[in-house]
Length: 212
Image (cartoon, rainbow, N blue to C red; front, side, top):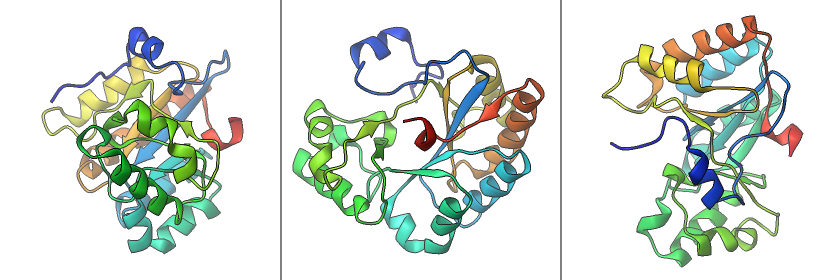
């Protein structure tokens, strides 16, 4: 499995119209959670965030919103932001544009947000340029990331995942975790330690909704 833990500058330069981080000199981090809601993982995440008065952004899969509406409502009630992560977690590079955009539109009927994150970070330029129509006319913000926790990767340990986040995050970083079955075991170790470490360093955790 190949991926960048820290998004290289040249990737950001090739795709400058996507949001990779939020430039700031303040001690602020933007924690994001993909693939939920999930009955155990998302509930755990929400409880941990509350302990640190932390806000985050949840990029939700539409079918999971339908499966767990009460958990989705709790995300919103707790003051967090949400974003569209397609209805069925589709890889934009492996599906026809029309089917991809139809899937985004289906998710948009359940997730009221202009924030969009493509599953696996894979989206074609055509798909990106036509997101607005699929998202009920909202001007889309395609949110990528600066730091990947790799909590989904069975080949790395939870300790390694924590190191990825701690040593590669900086003010304004957008950090990716996953509130999913696959990542839950690592997440239980990594998230509390991430929140504790950066809180001690004077960082705040904000949602993207409040700054975009």
